[in-house]
Image (cartoon, rainbow, N blue to C red; front, side, top):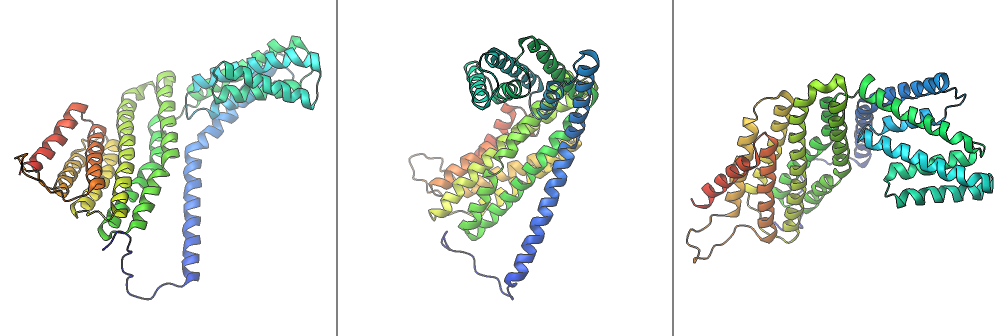
Amino acid sequence: MSAKQEPAAHSGPEPSGASRGVSGLRERARHAVRTRVWRLRLFGLLAVQAGIAAALAWFVGYQFLDNPAPVLAPTTAVGIVAASMGSRLRRTVELLVGVVLGLAVGDSLMPLFGIGAWQTGVVVVLAIIVAVLLKGGGSLLTQAGGTAVLIATLEPPVRELSVPRFVDAAVGGLAGLVVGLVVVPIHPQRTIRRLAEPVLDPAVAAMHALATALRVRNLGEAQRSLDTLRELSPRLTALDDGLNAAQEVVRLAPLRWRDRTSLAYYTRAVRNLERSLHGCRSIARRLTKALRDDEPIPEEFPAAIDLLAASVQSLRCAIRSRDEPREARQQILAAVDLVGRAQGEVVPDLTRPHTHRMGYSGLIAAGEFRMTADDLLIASGLDIDEAAVLVRRTVDREEWV
């Protein structure tokens, strides 16, 4: 069957358009509910942290700094807590530097030009330009501009207030750090697991769907699987931020120091799982191109993809329970063996011609498959050299049969 042909319609009465529409609405509603529940589980603690940090920052500023309206303290505290899915210390420095820039520019210009619409715009532009010249990140730019707005619109242009406002912001930054790292720190492993769920589950489903599409040579379904894997990029970024946050917590939070060893194990596994998912996307892209070009795809290749997807699930369960992932390794190596069979036997005599069972894109996909298998073996706890040797032995055993 050509790659551009669709599989034959299955027999039986087709559901009506209204039934399909109602079913689709129900599925979208269930997906929306599941997504919101997942986000609440993941970010609910951040809401508690933000509330405690804001209250603490306001209390300290009001009671101990004699500030009747410590606006910057709770504002900065909430900003620090919101940066918990990343580097809190770096974000704290950026926020405080941004506050200093906003204060400096605002307090320097507002006494000269007064308060008004165009004055506010000029102050914000200059504050952000200074932040850019200092090679500041997004947080520094945002805080510099935001602080400049506060100085230009909410505060009188009095130079003597600049130091108390900076202290106000510093108190907020420290309150956010104390709450996030000492009072109510995140649970590192639990946070990573919750961030990994929306990455691994769709990726495994997409790989199984790709294998099915290859068996029936359904180009449309293969493309949809590839699109699903591509759409995981923002979730992978969130997972990276979560890993950074978890590493910072176990390094700085006394309540989480005991989790350092287990988190190191988690981090190594998740980093290599991430690399393997990038490899899965490359495999899907090449095999979709093979279908589009009507290249042959032997039946062993879809079976290998199914086995590789199953190994991700097995590895995930083993990592969670801290068991030896023997089953996952066996599945990975069996998948590599199937890809070798799909590629075809190599003739020992290099002077004799060798006819591959796959086309150009398929052969590239086979190479990507072996690299992905290598990443998964490393994620299972093997070192780089040991994983490479296992893949090489499996390939050599198949090639010289």
